[in-house]
Image (cartoon, rainbow, N blue to C red; front, top):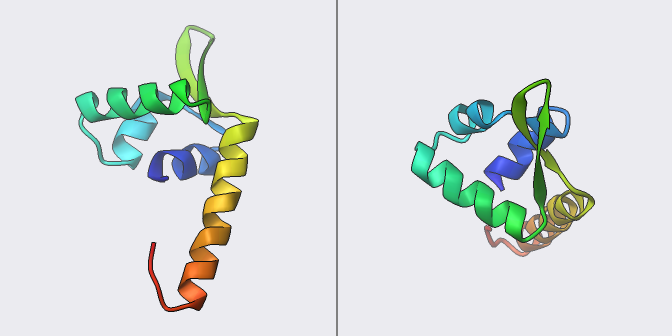
Length: 81
């Protein structure tokens, strides 16, 4: 969720370096997480002016919204996610 929120807060797209520092991850962990998120369709990789970026997909935005709903519901019952 940290990676998805970070990309969302960057206007829906972010460079890998920004994600690396913003999510406080090692390069190896970042690569693994980005690969998983791309493979399940929550983000996609693209190149713009010679730089790689990752952007949220429609499915990624939907996931964030559903996660927030679940978080609100669980907190209403005194649980944490």
